[in-house]
Amino acid sequence: MFIVIDGIDGSGKWTQLKRVTEQLQSLWKTVLILDFPRYWEKSAFMVEKYLNGEYGKEVNPKQASIFYAIDRFQAYVDVQSDFKNYDYIISNRYVSANTIHQAGKISDKNERKEFIEWLEDLEYNIFWIPKPDKTIFLNVSPQMSQKLVLKKEEREYLKWWKKMDLHEEDVDHLKNAHASAMEVVESHSDWVKIDCEEAGEMRNIEDITEMIMEEII
Image (cartoon, rainbow, N blue to C red; front, top):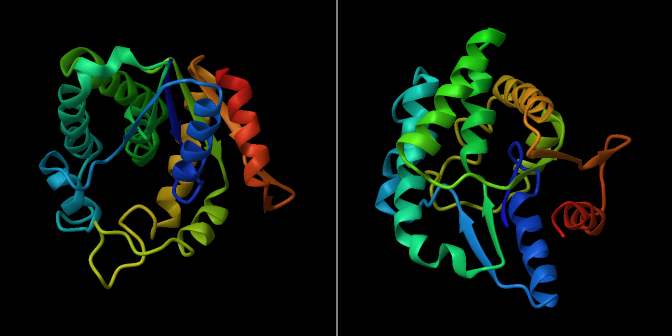
């Protein structure tokens, strides 16, 4: 089973990926972990420059999407020989991240739908990367997202003076990305929304993990 864990920034994607992996391994399942973008690889060079703002803020959704798609294509080339040798493949972000963040830049609903169709054709038909069985969307509000991002440790891909990347520092971008994700959850049967907040506070990490496990076991 190929699972993607995604969400807007600060939603706890990597934390939940690790916890879910540990629980699956305790059930004697073999797990392959993927993590995007792969900042340590040459294939993510343009992604790093983009997120540090080196291309400016006017990069259009299709341009940015191609940066990320190239990295995913190279990743699949690197692991494809082992891809079917695991019970579970779990990815931290995937095509879903472009669907959330880049589609969120498009205000017109019909244009946004057309972009998502273009994106899925690019990734799955042109680059021929595998399509996930299920995408788990960790649902947190944009306001909570920014609070949680500020608690993150220093990340290698950011310049030393930056606490947030291009997406994280823009609350309007986060709001639009969240709205885009809600549309996709409604229109894609292979997307599952996990509500990570209750009464304005984050749920316990353990409770979120349990909700994810119920969806994939």
